[in-house]
Length: 99
Image (tube, rainbow, N blue to C red; front, side):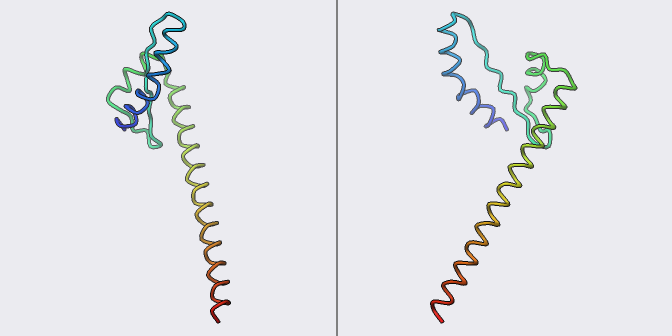
């Protein structure tokens, strides 16, 4: 999880620096990361305070994370089954050619 947090910091660092130069202001990157099962980093409470996130909003964010995770898993499984079906059909065709 901390690896993802560091990736987010690096990913947005260049953009933040550029925006800071354009608007002549300081930019602070806050990598708010949460897993589908609610696992968070050690700095999560600090980030919540910095962002002023209320408990009901945090619950809503976690519900979105759960929903998107389920959608992603479902899509991957469907794609996997489609691939298996295509492989089965190809095996059937190749067995006809061999016979």
